[in-house]
Length: 139
Image 1 (cartoon, rainbow, N blue to C red):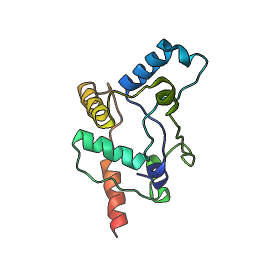
Image 2 (image 1 turned 120 degrees about the horizontal axis):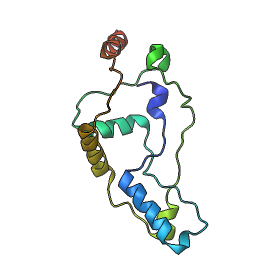
Image 3 (image 1 turned 180 degrees about the vertical axis):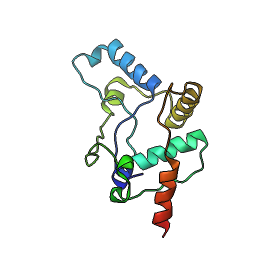
Image 4 (image 1 turned 90 degrees about the vertical axis):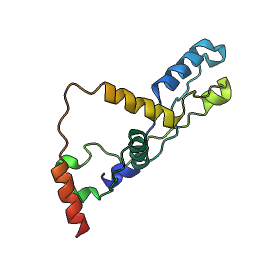
């Protein structure tokens, strides 16, 4: 994982929790004219990947590598120098909304769904290139 990508933070939310937050705001008159951010806490991408790995039962290693040591095809194609973190506490304070599904359970359900619904097509992963990078880093 490129170092800049590993530290990057951006919001996510489990679909059932986001849908429940929207329904809560639509149904509660106190929400009229208000704006609410809805998301879980924003861990760095490296931690997020580790949480997904745990939910999937994967015991591999996440390796963070300086981007300049990666081939072009493995470098991020977007600028990740700015985090996109937000404060989602207002909906809880004002409307007493609390997500019903915890992060661990949400990840478990998502992994289960993804396994049952694989994409129709996907570019093959280039494990040979990744193994070569790891071998050069070990030197």
